[in-house]
Amino acid sequence: MCGIAGYIAKDKQTLDPEILDRLCTALGHRGPDGEGRYVKGPVGFIQTRLAIIDLDTGDQPIYHENGSALVANGEIYNYVELRKSLCEASFKTRSDSETALRVYARDNIDGFDALRGMYAFAIHDAVENQVVLCRDPFGIKQLYYVETPEYFAFASEAQALIAAGLVGRDVRADARSELLQVQFTTGSDMIFDGIKRLLPGETIVLSNGRIIDRRRRQVLGDSASVGTHLEAALTDWDRVFEESVRVHQRSDVDYAMFLSGGVDSASLLGMMHRLNERPVTAYTAAFEASSVHDEREIARDVAKACNANHIEVMFSERDFWTLLPEVAARMDDPVADYAILPTYKLASEAARDFKVVLCGEGGDELFGGYGRYRSVMRPLLLGGRVMRSKGAFDKIDVLRPDVLEGWRDGIAASESRENRGKRSRLAVAQAVDCSDWLPNDLLIKLDRMLMANGLEGRTPFLDPMVAEFAYQLPDRLKVRKGVGKFLLRSWLERCLPMAHPFAKKRGFTVPVAEWISGQGKRLGPLVANQAGILEIADPSKVEKLFNTPGKREGAACWHLLFYALWHQANVLGHAPEKDVFETLAP
Image 1 (spheres, one colour):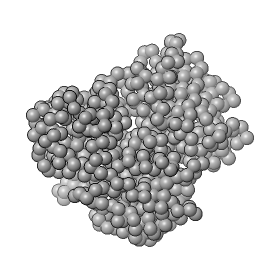
Image 2 (spheres, one colour):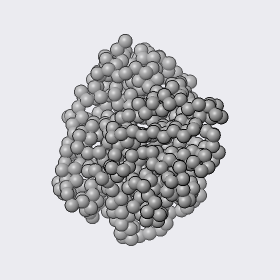
Image 3 (cartoon, one colour):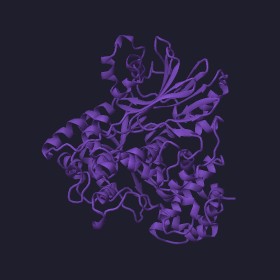
Image 4 (cartoon, helix red, strand yellow):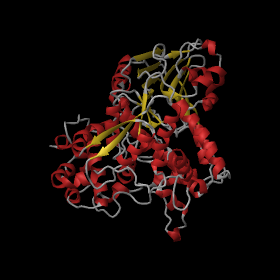
């Protein structure tokens, strides 16, 4: 896990080494174990390293004997198998990342389909004088780029491109609308004008700093589901899941995991318990007494059954007010998901003793866990509805009418694009979430919050072999009698019944609305008069909203508070103060 960035000057422009210096400084938090640099003519790469595999010889850039060079962020889990299929004697390191360079040298960009892992990497092909950028098919690792008539530049975080002076801080209105309504943004264009995301599974080839080829790897099929019986599916799933967790545990440093009271993380701990001789360390977020569901009791039972070293990390209201400015500042690609807060604190605690944690992201998307999937499956006359048909500010008269125009256009485009082949309604909904919600909310949250603390997060559910198995399951093994993730719950009931997998799903909730409501009178005027909020809302209406209790109003207040703090740090460039109130103070 690292940070990477690069700059390619066009048309004989000169490569300014100070640009690489600024990129390296901006990504320093992603790689406390060292940095590397590559410069050849108009091409320059940097990498900041968090050493996980091949601690001694895995420094980057990594070079091929033909002169080509690679910088990479992430992990390629099947590097052991790939080395055997390549000329292993030619390898210069024991690094998993070198396999990407060797695969490319043999098979060109077609070879990237063989990679299993989370990765974003860049290769300077010295033979063809081309630069190749590639991102893993789920988008677990991010890569951003900017293209101008003078240069092409890329980085693991968008803020590095801004910090290097390569692009401005202008906010796109349509992306801002998405963020306010649904808490994340869609597509290849991020919220900053001029910065693009390399899409999940996308590979681009550049010559003279210009894109000449673009391909995208798909891990979700277009065909109808494959019929199978429950018993056979359970046997196959046990094999697939064990193999995925096994390769995701490949590391030269110790690892732990994040445990909630949910099915996905309980399944993960159950399999890790099977595969590890020593007790697994599991971290669980807990909240002070409030109205939200507390998952500690189930997590304790699961941890005890697996003989895990269970560590509960308390997240308090004080943490909310003191950590939020820093957390919002870290989300350069903004995600108004309140789970960023406990994720940040869990990461800070785990990073004291570990460099790697395994996490349960992806289980809901691949196995049909969300309630919105069940709504999509029902006919409209029986209560069915389109996903994300309502936004946080629907029927809340606070924002200017033009601010919310077209807020659902990106989601609608994804729905149209993913409705292909013989996919069922459920399969289309899953594909839509894997296209945008997963990479642009959950995985950005995981990356930024963990890397802010020098911690790598691994997601065994988000593996091509797991996706191939899970996505083609018939709907009846995903959703049955109103219960999502039926197959996964059935497997967990057999392997770890104390997880109570068929108990009603409560969901992961942070009591942000409760905390905001308690400070509404003080907070309302501060939020209302922020520069970012004055651009989009009537300040008197904002103040009134913060004094109005209610679940929907609380959600809208949270989105405004997050956006105000994000705008302060990422648009205005103001460093966060010691708490929310001081950060927002005039």
